[in-house]
Length: 97
Image (tube, rainbow, N blue to C red; front, side):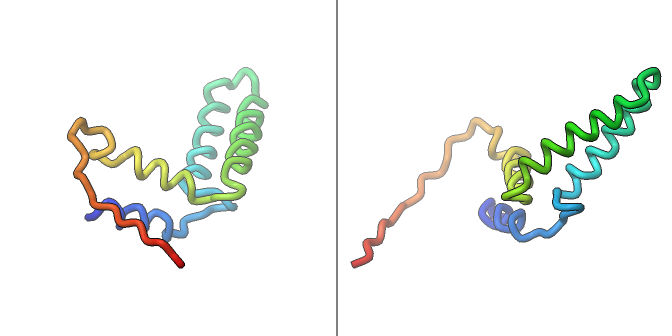
């Protein structure tokens, strides 16, 4: 699939849960439960982690909820990490009169 089409697909997918991309929302839930079980001697640490995590995520995704999906999609492409030289493309500038 063409890279430009992959980027467009990321921007058109609607997969939000409570205003966050679903993978960040459910990842935060799983991480909060894991922290709570990891530190059983301090029972409120899981809630503190959840508060800090979700506060930061809502702040980051407030204006652009799908922006992180674009970044993660771009970073996961093998062409991003390869040492191959980029293909030269012709650029045409159009002037509007």
